[in-house]
Length: 161
Image (cartoon, rainbow, N blue to C red):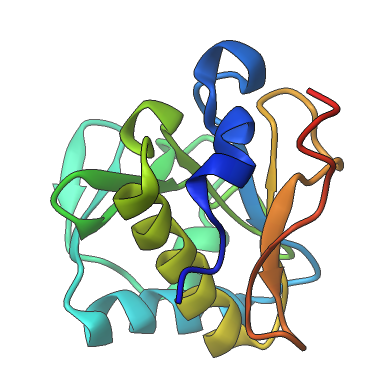
């Protein structure tokens, strides 16, 4: 059974209303949580590519990425849970796992199911909520993984937008 139904949440996946790149985050995280996400990517066999600036490198340990010199090239980890869905982890802070998705890739029930499954995998592994905020509206999540329910739930009224 689907966590969310497309007809109920499609307004939250409209790039014109929400911005194309919503912020997805795990608040109150730790370096260990970041490492657990990196380990999950490997265990699940998701295609991934780690880079610092333009240089593609092997995926490092979380500690090495998060505590790099301030003037170092910006790191990112591109993860494809499926061939058509990309999440880009940014490593901005050690206390929040953060990544972007492109709403243009998340249209329709099938892609929504992939996205919800991805959030659920991360949230379940960490035992923490995974929240999606509209682009530029940080701190106002519209949906997210609920730890107690062990599924992705709607956190905002779809009619508000």
